[in-house]
Image (cartoon, rainbow, N blue to C red; front, side, top):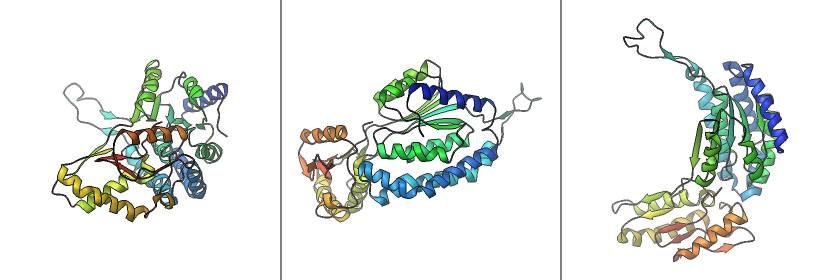
Length: 337
């Protein structure tokens, strides 16, 4: 089961630190065994993952399987196929000073790693960095998002049954507990989320000179030229914007195009949306919902900032926001962790 209280977090980290110091995670055979166990988790808990993400944000099963399971399995297979090559020393050219030496680059693990995952892809953005951390020979503390409660519960209860509990731990924590967790020294921190939270994590990491990877949300304009095939563009933009109800960090936020292209693109987008989700997208089995009330209200407020040209209907009880387009900007869910 996942650990929540600060005392349990501290105990878990000390256990992982002790395991790390034994060198247990370094042999290739150990790394392969843990990665293969992760593959069994994805296979055996596939249906549970689909159900949890459906309960959390009504993710359609195809979207959930593709983004949460299949992409993780592809990452896992690629890692297993290349791990032995990645672990080898890389011999480098020698200069006059090192001519009599043996010069090479050795890839050593960092140590005890913390992975903090977001809610928009709660399995994918948790397991993909975990795969890399295991492959590199680290011990790992994993913190799933507390916003997607059903997925968090699944990860906390099921994942420790597959991995070595001495070297890998799941921590369930809200903002307060995560803040306490960050007071501990880690050897690497991997975070996916907003710049606001990223600054907090980087500040905490700086106290221990801990290296970090921050994968943060931003703006994603989509430029459409006048000589493109408008129907292809419309279908691609609609797919990229409304996949996962728009809750994707690299979904196109707005379109840059000429007035002439806008006049062609708007009806093409309306046609693409109808093709994908039918005349009443609210009833479509292929359209997800906004993850929480806070996120719903934020996006609903954005709809009042311009002229809604297509869609934009809302239902707070269902946390539904229709595929909306404002002028030549796209209005739908966007990640806000």
